[in-house]
Image (tube, rainbow, N blue to C red; front, side):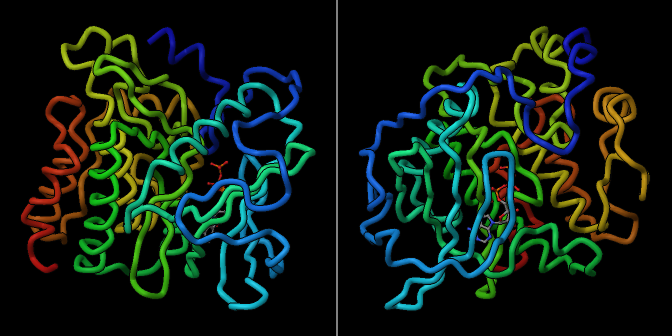
Length: 316
Ligand SMILES: Nc1ncnc2c1ncn2[C@@H]1O[C@H](COP(=O)(O)OP(=O)(O)OP(=O)(O)O)[C@@H](O)[C@H]1O
């Protein structure tokens, strides 16, 4: 638990604080030009063809804009990250770019292109998800069938990523986007990691602390466990919490309306019983949440196994 205590300053809602404040020149392994640099798909679009419509949001790395293609009127999301970043943020962006180039799934937000300006500013052109994040579902009454449809798509995305040895490490409502076609996709690979060797470990305190699994919260205890190599199970815990949050309308590890503080959260995750689906839910949904939120990573179901859970087999 020492590591947990040492990390009390961490923001509960945001990604890791910056490790270093030293600015380094930004030089990515992509051609330095303000035109199209690298294509994640075959659709090549140049920055000069894009018109900014409005700001969609902003994260640690920079702002995301809704942009329109001047001739086709096609909408895109353009994430801009400034060049004057510290080395930790630069490495994070490099990892994100590496993963975006690798992935191609209907359950992961598509990256069309990556541009870099001579100033070092990097822009990532993505498919536009017009209904925004799953956070907007909070407070809406979500039916079990709707939840099953969301869960199925996110799990297909996670199963795909885990098959490529990619751990997302920041699954939460704010990183799952939806569109008016009923599609739900995984976004934001800012803290994700490709597991090179089978025994690679994940940095425990990466991502949003509130959604961290018990083994990531208390990595010393996890080290004592036999299955510490099961890094993918952390994504499943975060997924389970996210599904429960959408269902009940509030962050399920804390009482409704409770402002998260480090101590309460740590006790709830490491010492408390995992949260459960409410009484009125079907037995299948209760069991599904239970399979996602087992405290021991070895007992938690994998994303692929969850896809065959009875809760998700009721319709497809
Ligand atoms: N492809 C997209 N389509 C529509 N909206 C998007 C898209 N990508 C991002 N957004 C919006 O922009 C916001 C900011 O996204 P971004 O990935 O930069 O940051 P974040 O996930 O909120 O924070 P951080 O990266 O610091 O964890 C999102 O919360 C979402 O509302």
